[in-house]
Image 1 (cartoon, one colour):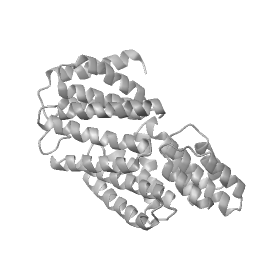
Image 2 (spheres, helix red, strand yellow; image 1 turned 60 degrees about the vertical axis):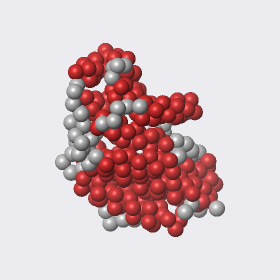
Image 3 (tube, one colour; image 1 turned 180 degrees about the horizontal axis):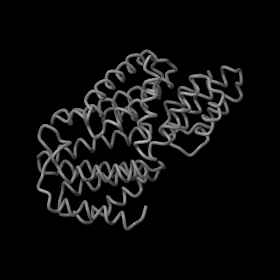
Image 4 (cartoon, one colour; image 1 turned 120 degrees about the vertical axis):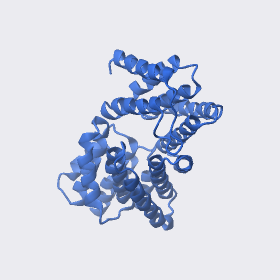
Length: 335
């Protein structure tokens, strides 16, 4: 992304922030704060449409320098940096940096003057910390953070934010159960996902996040969960079609997710090309959980065909960080 555009976007946000006297609506923190709404638009453009989280983090850094005298905007700029960085490939150095950033943000948010802006910042921080903990495989903490975000959003009437956080809490709880091997809890964990998915679908109707979450991300996660627990569902085809229909509207950032859903759907209908499609994802450079999911499906296929050596080799090649639950499933299959 051109640095001039990054600078222009940061300047645009700063210009709005410096004169912005608006606040989130007390009954819906997602509305009313004009600078927050503009940041959401910039996020959608840079992160979703252009698939450039590094550029978004840079927008946040430039914005931070321009709004030092505005405490709430200092936090919002830092949250933009945090979001951009957590979407980049994870390594020990980045993970430690994000842990330190989250601790600093926690202190900065608590120091803000009481009011709707502070509550919006609190809810956003809990959400972003939850997604970060998920990325590094701390599914228990991820679920706790999303539960906190849900409660904070509900306290101020943000039904959209609460619905997303509640769904993610149930999704991360399922991941935790899969990693720990709690087979008894899986049925109730998946039922919780279904219930929170229905709530998300209802509460996001007509919202700006309907396509991204109700039609794409959430159905994608339902499909993921079914593959991990190796179950069928009456709404499988409906969820697959929802993802494939929404994907072109979301830009290149969602393309890898669409690719995996296509490959999983091919596998379910015994398409002879599904093996190649899954191998391309499993051996690629995409996110660890998507790669591991594709490899898990190939492990099951190898075991079904009696290719035990191939199954062991596939499990050994699985990425671990952020995919610990999938690796745990695969390892249990080999016992």
